[in-house]
Length: 158
Image 1: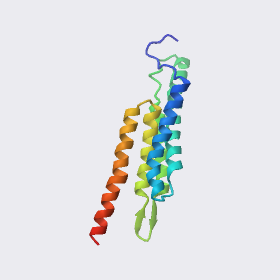
Image 2 (image 1 turned 90 degrees about the horizontal axis):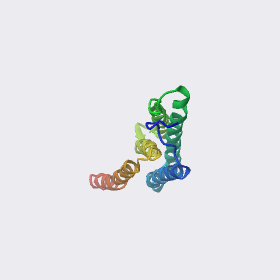
Image 3 (image 1 turned 180 degrees about the vertical axis):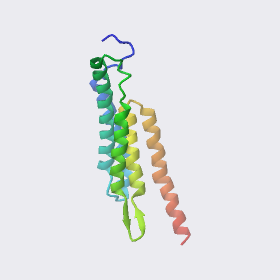
Image 4 (image 1 turned 30 degrees about the horizontal axis):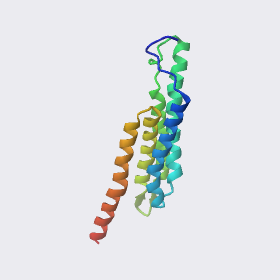
């Protein structure tokens, strides 16, 4: 099709780059959880980010294929519906990381980092490496620096 508004076909090397970036950035998020011996660690975060990137790439590819079949511009087919499904699914996964025990709730930060790993995967899968990278850098600051500060403040108040 010579439709100038159609999405360009993604080269296999670009797909590999997007998936690899997603997995590596998910790994950065998961590394901190792994260091703190949390149940959802390095591999979990990498898999969530990789899965989200894969779903995103598949949605973009479907938009390219379905648009011409339906006789519509490929930008009319809405790949963001897949993103909505990813967000809901990851929310369910994150809920499984939250544990209520003896009146306290644990796992909220891990659930949040799983959710962010999905968002980073979506960003990398859509080719927005800057958004994915900045998100991971900010997450590392939140998890490591603020975690350290929070620990110091809680110890000094005892």
